[in-house]
Image 1: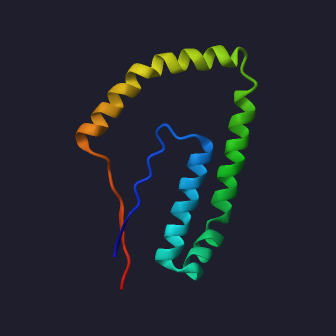
Image 2 (image 1 turned 90 degrees about the horizontal axis):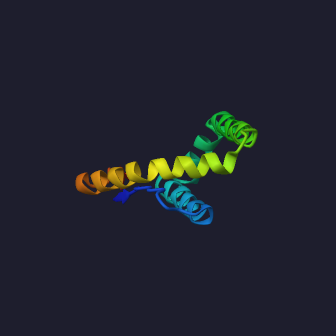
Image 3 (image 1 turned 135 degrees about the vertical axis):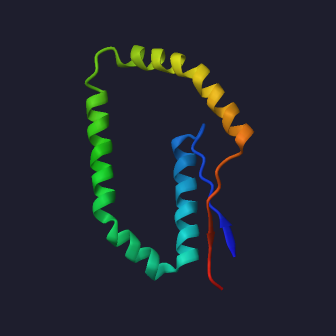
Length: 104
């Protein structure tokens, strides 16, 4: 059995991102079994905590910046043309797909 695990975060709101993440986690648990999935979560708990702490620190530093909203607006305006080009290039090449084969 092959399962398509494409995960494309473009234009996702946080709630939709979380739903997709939960769906991906359920898919992996179904493919690998609860025991293996739980063991992997346990083995990665320090990586997960390090990532969480890094996100907190990034947010803390971000909100220390003066004129944050103006800087974000300027950044988004400068990125818009590049973003359109990148999406067009990705559409031409097709999205990269990751497939997981489950024995059985």
